[in-house]
Length: 182
Image (cartoon, rainbow, N blue to C red; front, side, top):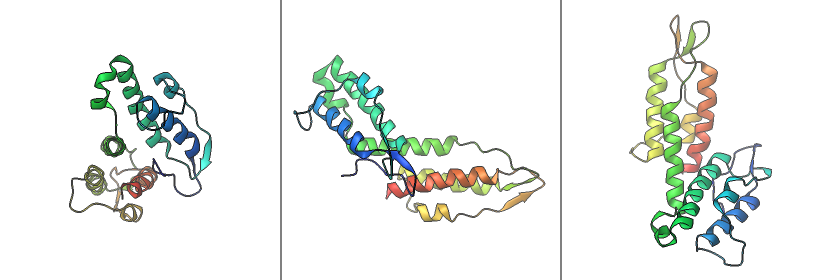
């Protein structure tokens, strides 16, 4: 079972076996899943480390989910009766992760183009707006990972545009995120 998006290509991510074992312990502590595993504390989750594995889970997705689980574990420790209203579900974590990615797109800042050449800022900004709407699920015309990978922008001369390498690198990462959106 894939609990989190996987890294693409030859890159390494968190070892799914390690992550799934920790999640199983978290779920048992929160009162879901098997009772035959050792309970875990919020501090255990904060200090967890994972081996690297090619094709593993995306670190950002796992880290974000673990932050939510830390809150749930701390809430349980303070008031176990109210846990059912505050514990994160898999779908809630997934949607929070995509919201975090949308906020990341909104906050991105690119360096100015060099030697008077860069991508047209208005075109890039409009495309980023479409990506944000796609990540939030608020558009009838979502952008696909393929469209992001194949995006082309006009270059501007003699006035500042966005540094081409910055935009291309950022969009490659966002394409990976959009593949997980499905």
